Image (cartoon, rainbow, N blue to C red):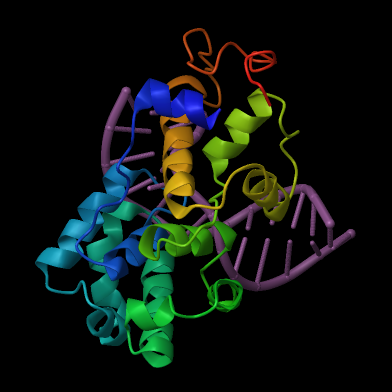
Length: 215
DNA sequence: TGCCAGGCCGGGT
DNA sequence: ACCCGGCATGGC
């Protein structure tokens, strides 16, 4: 599936940003939200000079809320961004190099213990901000896997995550591309209501992957 | 117009 | 271990 997607869509070059911290903030802002709306919020934060750990850790919430309006759930997200920034500052002096020097399993647990950071956001931060080899399970991955009967759709997050991480080489670059490719194919061919699988490079579900792989 | 987007939390069973 | 309501703007 990964090979087919890469062939069909090419490298996605996901998540280039000015800093790892910007990626982490973006990971929070994109919770259940279109990326387009996240970008507008990030631009406002940046152009107001607030895109730093210290600024977001110390500025009052009402000011942060105004900047985040376009990303939706802006009151929730202002709190989450601030809680995260304060943790990052207090624990790692706001330095990604210190943060990602921590053992992966430990760091993931730390992230999950922060209010507002769930499994997907934690993995997104690890992968796209820290280049750590973890797979990010999101709604698109679930939907695509379900359409191709690789899962039934109700499995817990960790089950889907391990399915992929045990099936593929544990390389950050691979998980980076795979997740982005799943979003790409999901957006185009695997919507909720209108599953237009007709021209999907993965074939018409179900079972179109069978017999096309050597295992 | 209504529906949904790259989730998570808190409270309930 | 699930299930659910709440959170909120913007685009089609």
